[in-house]
Length: 307
Ligand SMILES: [Zn+2]
Image (cartoon, rainbow, N blue to C red; front, side):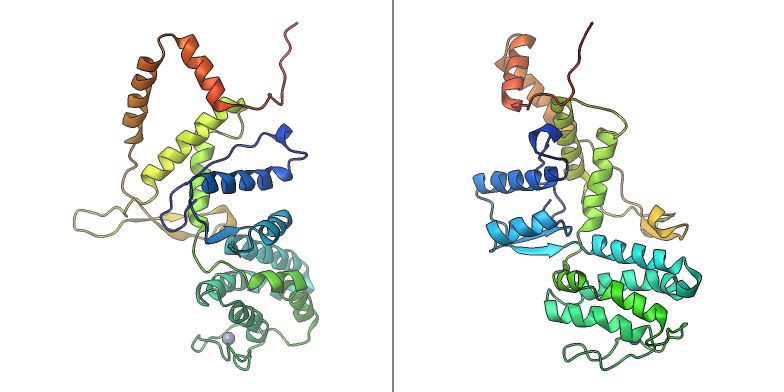
């Protein structure tokens, strides 16, 4: 997906029997996307992914010229879950109380630092001072917090809960990756695309390769036709919102923009394509044979036997 235009540029379908294990599917899909864009002479300057080890390795070895960023949502969610789990035990309750603020802090660190790795790191680690009511002296690039007066339940420096939180927030691997948190907002877009895919290809149903590919293409067409819809307004021009209760927020309400109605303009283009195919092939058998050749599907992973 091109994050600046919120358009799906390419989709790759990898069947589990095409690779060694299901873990390798994501990497294979990425490799194929790279190949597709290369064949089309489309250059890539930046790539945003999760912190998948094999992807990190691939980018380092095969694409050192591309800036590889990590998606903030995955990092923030990971930290939130760990703090929340820690907070379940009574003596570490404070960790749970701070979990949401710290997860939000990850977004702010990434979005406010223009991709400067050291600045993001200093902002990130400043949270350990902040939770103890120390708001300055964080680092040479980020000296003091930017908030005004606040009052909260602070944590005692050096206490057991502080030390456990430090382990989570300043782990060696996490600190290394925090510097590469994507400064651009991208996740909500990809999440919306996944929702569209789930609509066209519900996970509860099984689809054979060609069907699945067709459904993915439809999802991409639908998404690209609708990804940049403006916000809906009332007659007097007031912007419309609704209240949502996302799962991740555990009952907390968040305001969401209501967009103008979806369009299905791509259907007209598809119908035109059907007419072109009809003129190109005189029988359904010929059209089907050509389609299977074009699709080049791998052998099915499930074989059906008829007694
Ligand atoms: Zn502070």
